[in-house]
Structures are given as C-alpha cells and as structure tokens.
Amino acid sequence: MKETKWLFIAISAIGGFLLSLTGLSIGWMLGTLLAAMLLSFIKPDFLGEKGIPKYWLYIGQCILGIELGQKINLSVLNVFQKDWAVILIMLLLSIAFSLLSGVILWKFSKTDMLTSFFSTAPGGLSAMPGIAEEVGANTAVVSILQTMRVFLVIFIIPIVVSALVFHPSVEPVIQAAAPAFGWSGLLWTAVLSITAYAGYHIGKKLKFPAPWLLGSMLFTAVIQSGTSTAVGHDVIAYWPHEVMILSQIVIAASIGSRFRKEMFVGLKQTIAISFVSTVLFIGAMFGCAYIVSKATGLAFMTAALAFAPGGVAEMATTAVVLNADATFVVAVQVLRIIAVILLLPPVFRMLHASESRKEVHSHASV
Image 1: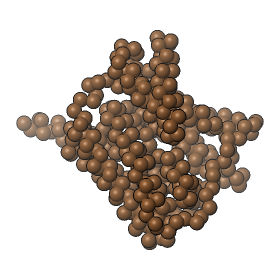
Image 2: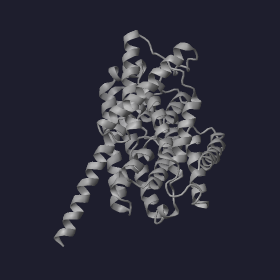
Image 3: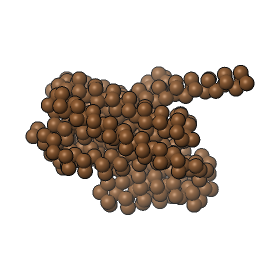
Image 4: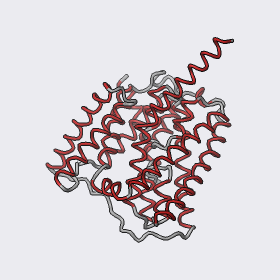
C-alpha cells in the first residue's frame, strides 16, 4: 500500500511539473490535481475509495498555513495601518459579492448550498477544496469552479487594467525578502514549525474548521508579526519555494485521489451558471475598485489588482509587471484570503445546518 501511495503522488507530481513549465504560478497545484483526477478516473482501484491517507492533506495544509502566516509581516502591518478603511471596505465587499455569487449558483443549479458557497469563496485554490472536503462539500465541483475563477481572473484582470488608462501608479514596488539560509533562518523555521503544530492543537480544541490550516496560520501570523515588531525588522525564516511546491503537490494529490466520475454528473449547467456569476463578480470588483480609487486617490490599477478575486502570487506578479503598488496588492490579497478562510466556513456550516433543519420540518409537516 505504501508503494502504491508514493507511486500515485509521484505520477500526479509529474503533471504538476509539466504544467509548471508554462510559467503559471499555480501550475504545480493545478497540474497535480488534473493528473491525480485522471489517474483516479482511469484506475479507480489504484488507491480505493479512501484515496491517499488524510495526513498528506494535513501536511500540505500546515505548510500552507505557515506560508500565509509569514506574510503578515511589518510591510503588511504598515499598509494596513495606513489604509485600513480602504482595505476593510474591499474585504467586506469581496465577501459580500462572493456570497451573492454562491447564492446564484445554489438557486439556479443543482449544486447543494455548501458546495456552491465553497466554490465561489475567494479563499484560494490551495485552501478552499481542502476545507470543503472536511465539511462534506463536493470537492470535485469546488476544485473545478475555483480553478475556473482563478483562470478568468488571470486572463481578464491584466487585460482590462492594461487597456484602461487610469492614473498609473508611481509608488515604489517592494519585493519580498529572499529566504535566509543560515543558522538564524533555520532556527526561525523551526520556531514557526513548532508554533504551527501548537496552533493546530489549539485550533482543534477551539473547533476551528481545518485546524491544520487555520490554527497554524493564525499562530504563525501572531508569532511572526509580534516578533518582527519587537525587534524592529522582519524576522525571515529559511522557507524556499520548493516547500510550497511540496504543499501544492500533496494537497492536490490528496484531493484528486478521491475524485470519482459520478461526482461530475450533471455539471454542465453548474459550470455555465458559475461562469456567468464569476464574470459578474469580477465586473462588480472593477466597479468597486473604480469608486475606491476616485474616493481615495489610490491608483485604479492598484485598487483593481487588490480587489481581484484571484491568488496572491498571480496578482502580485501582475502588479510588478504593470508597475502597480505590489505591497498594497499583496497586503489586501493576503488579508482577504485569511478573512475568507477564517470567517466563511463557519458561516457556511451554520447556513447549511439551518437549511437542513428547514428541510426536516417541511418533510415532517407533509
């Protein structure tokens, strides 16, 4: 069984490697997911119904939690302190429009409520399918619709902000610090790893959804930002890009190993409705970005990239290429993803429980 598990992950990772050659920042995640999905379809008995053991998903979620927690550094805190009102408006509007998009998908397709909300939540392709699996949503639908949203954002946003001439940003672009290889960097990596593990246990006791992700993320963020503030500069861990590649591979392979053909039955209408609601979502974000840019004097290009319901890496890269304020974009994107991962899953579960109770009462009355 162990050899089969390792072989499945290795074959899936080849798909991630091939798609990463295109330069797509989510290539490892998406390619591994596609390869794992195809392998599960072609040979459903390769791993059986249970797929890869759950601890692989937990390992990937913990790595992702440490990655997100580290991004709450002094630069992000300074941006939030300076522009907290704009960021708060962006966060609330992003969440509101994603909920509206989820309601549209739920009401006009055959997708259940829980799956609809997780499919439209702008919490990142790496995080949302894993959390959705833990609460019982259809991970196949969530993965497909999350992927479609990210692709639409990547294709639409740069084209529109490049074509429209709205106050190009002249603010300096601040690049993230490089991984620090040395005793200090390795020591800080160990500290964050222990913090993440402790965060999981605390998150589990507090009944967090996906405690390996949320617990590790929150406590890493607290230690990272608190220590950096205390010493007066960002404390940098040795955290090479290969670590995040490993996270993408194990999360995608774990999710893909549980895909079955029956999960995709009747998805034609769901995909069509999701496409329309996602385009409307992106359009609403453009409108909000324009209003915010006019009201605050913030460059439209910066506001649009910060509002965009895509990934941190994709929007940060676009911001650098288009000479927008990458620090502000990264700050808003990171805070939005953390807010979505932290706030929305409990809300979705409460709504799902309420809907289930209504169905029980309606059946009882009949």
